[in-house]
Every structure is written in structure tokens, then in C-alpha cells.
Image 1 (cartoon, rainbow, N blue to C red):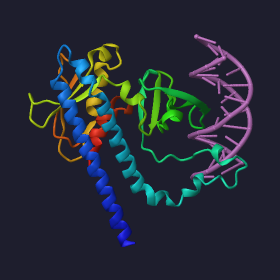
Image 2: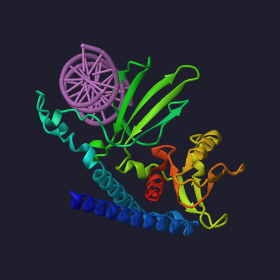
Image 3: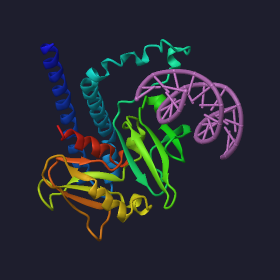
Length: 271
DNA sequence: ATCATTTGACCGCC
DNA sequence: GGCGGTCAAATGAT
């Protein structure tokens, strides 16, 4: 038993180290991408995109493996969930998967805005505690790439209108990387050696997708996983940039759709 | 014709 | 047994 535990700990540690190394590589590529930016910079940086995507995928696999190792004990007793629905008349392939162990988080919005990812509605339901219908969505690439991301959207307030979107699981498919070129995490040496610069593509911002108010909300959503305070600066004249005056001990949780790569990067530094 | 959404039924969990 | 989550056939939109 003792040996099993230490072996598992070792495996977890190795997975974390591997993920962290790849995250570092990814960051280096992004920094090179920044320093290469000029008139023809876009084309030049595009050459590196397959590598970036590959690195991000490796990080995701590493995270998934780590979570599986961590959860293997708690899920052990439930391992019969998919073993053919013994009591069911349905064939095993048609058995409904129940409880998801993926992380979930919610975002409230006043409007039903696009999050830029590709979803397919697969059901809707009237829930007991809410007078409004809840809509269920899964990733459009679920079948092609076995992407586990799902979300449900529910109106929670009439006036002013308010919608709660609950996400479950990160996208592991191509749509999460293709559709979010507007957000970058870079070093900001002009401010402080350890600081980071979170910037948004102007076109994206000008489409009213991110308003000044939301940017402030975003800044308040950034919190330190250590006790140290995190200073966030939103320049008044340039709302498409945020300076994070802190080292990498941050927990960024604004939304999965706008922070996939950033989320992964920050997640690695929690360990 | 193809693809997305709607809808009712099924299923597991509490 | 009630409830919420998921499936797939039916329906609608393009």
C-alpha cells in the first residue's frame, strides 16, 4: 500500500514536471513571437503555430493524466458507471454518462453573448428551482476529437436580464486555439522584471466583446494563490492591456473561452 | 440534402 | 419517485 502511494506520488510529480517544462517552452515561443512582430511578423510567427498547438496539447494531456491520477481513488468505487449499465435494457454504447468529474465554473452575463467557441445544443430542460429553461451544449468537435467540454446556459433573472453560463471541462479540441488569437500573455520588462502583460487584440476589443466594465471585472477575477497581493493596472487610455505586477503565482478564472492558454500556463505555476 | 435544434424518453443519482 | 443530464428521432432551417 505504502509502495503504491509513493509510486503514485512519483508519477504525479513526473507529470507535473513534464507539463511545467512544456509550459515554459510555450512561453518562450510566445516571447519569441512577440519579439519577431513587425510588418511581416504575422507570417513569420504563423510558422511556429503548429509547435505552439502541439505544446499546448501536451500540457493538456499532462494535466489530464495528473487529474486522473489524483482522482483514481475517489472514482474507484464508481468505476461501474460505464460497465454496461447492468440494469439497463439499452446497449452499453447508449448508456448515459452521469456525473462529470471535470472542473466547473460559472459566469453571469447580462446578454447572451457568443463566447467564440463552437457549441452544439443537445437538449434543454425546465428545472425545478428556476422558471426559465436551461439549455445544454456540448463541443461541436465532441465526436471528431472527443472534446469533453460542455456548458449549460440558464436565464436567472428577468429584469435586468441575467444569464448564467456554467462550463464543465476545458476544450481539448482545435476550436479553443483557433478562435482566441486576441489574447496574449507576455513579459512586461518595462514595468518590472517579474511582471506580466496581458493584452487583447484591438479588433476583438472593438467588437464590443470586452467592454471597459468587463475589463475591470476581469482584473478583480485575478487573484493570487499565495497570500501576496497581486497588483493589476488597467491603463485608462488603453483598455486592451492589463499589467500584472506580480510573479506567476496567479489564479486566472475569468472564463475558459478567453483564457485557455493563459489558464493552462497559470495552472502550472500553482504546483 | 444536409445540418442544427427541438422534444420526449431514458437513465443515474439523491 | 423526483430531478437533472443525455440521447436520438423528429422537425425545422438553409
